[in-house]
Length: 392
Image (cartoon, rainbow, N blue to C red; front, side, top):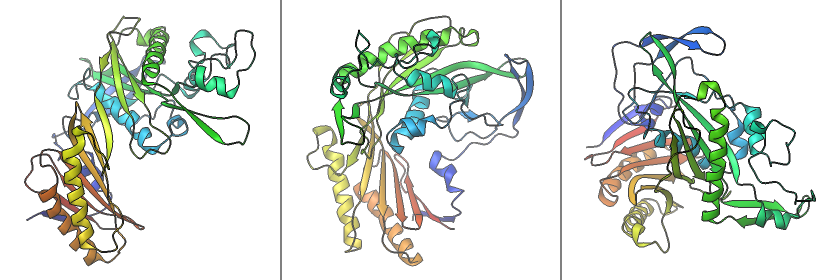
């Protein structure tokens, strides 16, 4: 029998984030000293940690110094989410979740990030550490390049810069910066107009060019960060993120990262990252995806049998090192009765176990025009799913 619960919508947020949380007896209250202003403030390390894959976050929560820019600089909501979550995931290669605590970036403010995202000739009067990291749109004589030439020879490579801070506890009951992570979101397509208010054209940027330019930009970013006294003696993780097209329904991923060890003014050796998001079903899947695609098509056929007027089921698979790790499925429903939702949800729970891979994390969301209706979570190698019906 499936584990079946009615729960308030807000409670399910914790369930979405991971496994059942582990609880400790007390929260820890520390003193956090601001090194630049000599201000002492009380900081709380929460006692609850969802699982070993998640960092504890300090309280009170400090928003990023460049908060809000990510929404305007990245194309899709999927990239907005993954550029941050992916950076946190690769940061675990350097900062373990037991001894490090997460905080949004506090060192790169809105003005700094905005300046870095500009073309180098657009803010050439700024100090060197604030000049644009994207190529100029003028030639050697200062003449403005045509839109077509810009698209092929000087596209905008750097779309956004994400900063995350990782803090550690000291012996004198304080927390201090233990390291930072930087994500460089890079464009895979350059969009442009030949004339104002005209049609939008696109120029794909080759992967080799994205990687080359990304690594060059990373070197400059590390050099600039090391000029700050407070960032000279901490490791810096820097990752390269390739964002997808503006109409994509899956996010891009990080494809390479490096660690600049404390005191080092350059990036270290680059490490390849083999991660990819794909959509199911596929019409002509590669060999790597064929088995899962067949399972998903069988799942979809069983869903279609339940209601004759059913429309679409979309799956998103997350692969690491060519192995499926998570499968997220969205099922939009066109009926609204409570009993219908319960019956359909129970039916889906059985179909999941019959048709989909057992050794991956599976998340199925049922939605209607009213919003989220139900959530089914099946963890890898579990014998039954956990079912949630939203109770508004």
